[in-house]
Length: 367
View 1 (cartoon, rainbow, N blue to C red):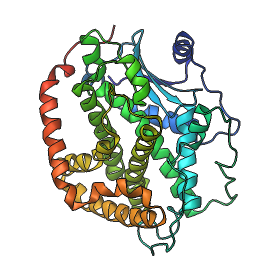
View 2: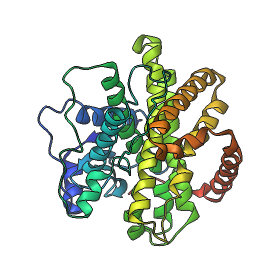
View 3: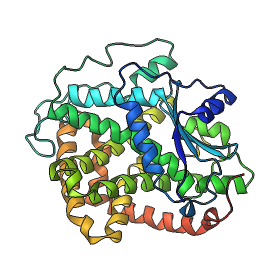
View 4: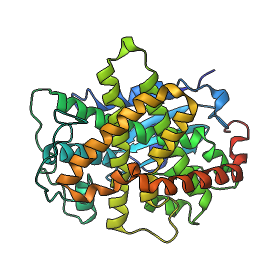
């Protein structure tokens, strides 16, 4: 039997009311975000209950909540598991997508190849966080942040929307990974609140002690989400997607993760990282990508060719971006051969933490 998943139903509304949250209203003419959320729900519903430690008795509820911070969360609540996405994250992803395309041309023709643009620019950083930081400063909305898109759909606009969608899918699958990998069960088993936020500043108020297990859980959820998305793209039947579209999907998934992680770096640099932060250093989180690639390559030799090509394309795209905006060097470091030792050290640490937290996969269903 598979896990039951619904999107923005009465249970999600009841949870939001219980937590003092507002369910985000449906925007008129939305033919992208809600359909994407339903698509994510169908993906999660493919998981059998038998593979989930302590599966929720009443299923998983997905939804958007009206909150300005670029955050997502997962919580065990009244025999449900709630996965919530703040509207601030949607705005952040959209803002980053517009900046990357309009200011840098990241998704233009020659995506993954093409010449390197000659002149650097002074792109406002942190990427995708201008609206949220203005909110924190009480400055209100800046309509110039999201510029009006052209009416015609182009290859660049399609790739940009794929990038935005991959970022949203990653965020939701990361939160689901906390359930699938037994993190909520581990918290409950230790008498802690079974709730995890993406924004570490929020999480610190719920989980006040710095804990290596919690930092491990964030790495593990990142890797779970990346492996799920990349595996899905590589194993989709040929009749469902062209070779070009498949390669674009693999490449945009990798890039979306790297730039979402770059946004986390910018957020912590701007707001400040607390001494009791429960999340890893965001620069280390960038290395979830090579860790996920290592796991997939160990899983199947058939993944080697598409992943190798996608990495080559990511390197070419990042080279173009870095020339235009040198502040983006951090994501490019994950492909640097000089960082192999760092990746190997993270792999060893992950294996040790996996053994130390093995009990997280035990236990019965959520009550």
